[in-house]
Length: 264
Image (cartoon, rainbow, N blue to C red):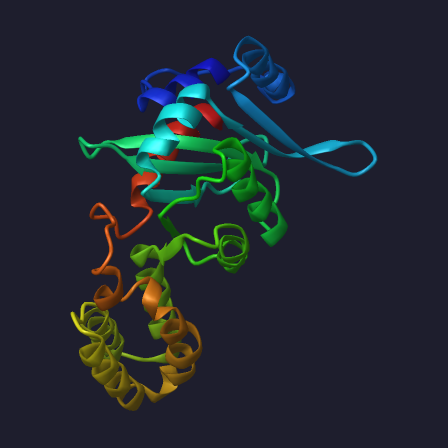
């Protein structure tokens, strides 16, 4: 299975019809990756161990092509996302992807992690720096996980960190439904989109103040959650930088959908 995953991560395709059932994968993964490193020293493998039994809680790898060609070429806009722990190994698959000149998705690096804490994300991000001569992404898109937010701030200090608008809007909808009733819910969501798509900061601020007045039950959410992170999702801010048209982490979702068929 692992050679096919490697092929997919480098070349960006894997037949959906291929079903792979190998119960020894979990035990042989590290050995397999180390064999690739022995064959090619530029194939980097890093591990994170825990406890007296040295339990494997993190596994990062980057192929020589990803390290020497793909990451340097496409690190200007990088998307990161973790799968849920839905496979039988109870580990999240962490993917870094970029966009090539044909607007195709290219996987730049990958990791498996048992936990999704600040320390674990810091470890993964540090692995990418160590493997690429400290070449951090120019722009990085992630979801709003507080652990990842902290890890990026501490590890990718020169990176412009932007948030996935899909995750933000899903959270906005959830919050609206918990605080508001009836048609006001849809009004709140529409006003959020209107505010988010403001082309100037002045326009954004004006619409934000209107929402504070109009939706008092959501004031705390607007003031404490949305507003502080506005530079990472508001159009007036992100429209000033190159993002290759990216606004969310949804590119990775389609990849995860294929890989889950083989990892479950």
